Length: 259
Length: 215
Image (tube, rainbow over all chains, first blue to last red):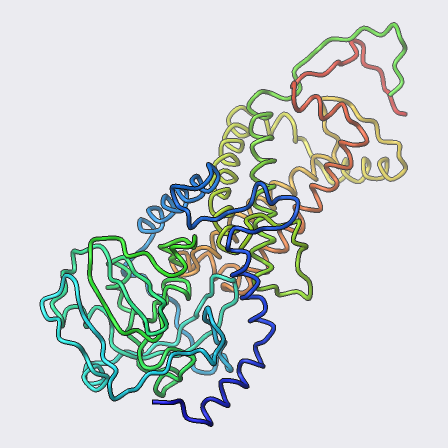
């Protein structure tokens, strides 16, 4: 399926609108490749992606990040709900955020799209959008906090991930729930966060089907974690005890990133 | 200070070992927190300026956050050790009390007329207030930082600051206040360099028969 011309135009316009942010993103990606300028470069050339193979400083920072994962898992209260807001506080327009510009959003055909389920689950039958919509839906107006610091209030609705995992007979004692996306993004959650009542497989944004730039046709929404922990355009869910990492986590963002 | 050449001195410890160790650990921790914090601010600035690249630590946002979330433990735990020592060994009571508004205004007036004596081993009222403000800013930085790190788990604390977005501004303003303190602190060290030696060795020469020495 080729993208509808008006939709393509809209995304190109969006790209022009957010050009300054894109320049920043490109700079960020450039700096990540271990290259850092300035007087502190010797001290700060953090290429955290090297994990345990890096310099002493990189290894120390990596170890501290893993220790912070454990502290955060301990701080996480599975019953504590993220604050919710009235509809009047919803931010519009909502920011587009990805590791690529909006006209690179993956093209997805609703007719052939399906959600694969694998790993430690009883029922590995793929899910269609229709089947997902037939499950009980939950709606939330919560604050999305980006790792960059900015935040916006939005409305998401969909299937609580806990209900979905129970439905497919997932091993709820497993450590991780992982996600793969149509845009080659990937991510994972600790099981307690995956089972949190506000963690949803979101089908709708602002009361209607997810627009392309916010994760069409299905995204994860985890209001107890930073934004990058909520992958968009997901095509696969799996349950595992082997650490699955994530697109940004494997480059050095803290994995737990609870808020 | 005017001291005649035949004055007798005694060497005395003016900064106990624990104060010196926590001071220098704090200096390293604050350096890391400031420079990584500025890099984090640059990722999404809320004022019409960013910090220059040379004044950032971490190379990219992920590196800066890794520094910030590692050094925060050093800053908080070292600060806690210092505060416990200050309270239980009566270091605070001895060094920073008594403190009265009258003494502060008197010493401040002397300071602007450049008539304030520097008595080694003893803080004047302006210094006492400056250190008190720095402690309070440190506490505010930790509290607002916790609200930013955990605005859901610690939502009561975040609400105290007026929510996540206000906590960001409070964190930034507290940082600015601490930077102001550091600049003043460094300027005074440059003016009276022997205070730097004292913070390393802990020792200072004090005249045996201290006379009123206003220069």
